[in-house]
Length: 171
Image 1: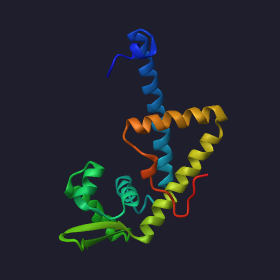
Image 2: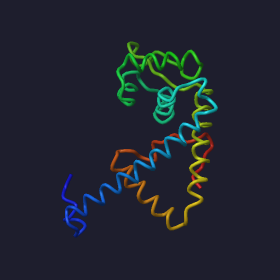
Image 3: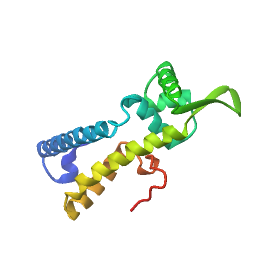
Image 4: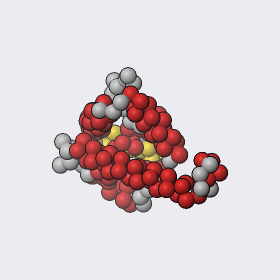
């Protein structure tokens, strides 16, 4: 990490204090978001686990995906991804089919029910986050948009790749 004092005009110690305050704020915010995510899964937690839901979200964002690609995207080994996919297939949430362009590969995709669950959970998250954000002032909301966009960009996450509920429109 570069010397923040050159950017801010503050001493290096002040930069470290600022960095520490940012990290603390982000960690607090992440705890809140994890709690929101856990509550949003409440209605379907008897059917799927959080890691399985992550796989479903990736499929919702990427469409048909090879198992090896899925494992890479989730940061797990192929056998773990295969077990997750098998459980989701048994639950009727994912379909795995032979790739018509390469018969040695299989492609996974969400079923209609799988997509419905992703949409339902994401809408619950959206509603709860919306209620939290609604308690902020307009100025705080604008600052949050700017900060979160910068944070997401620095982390390689794009709002365009996030799954959206069917028929959902940006307001």
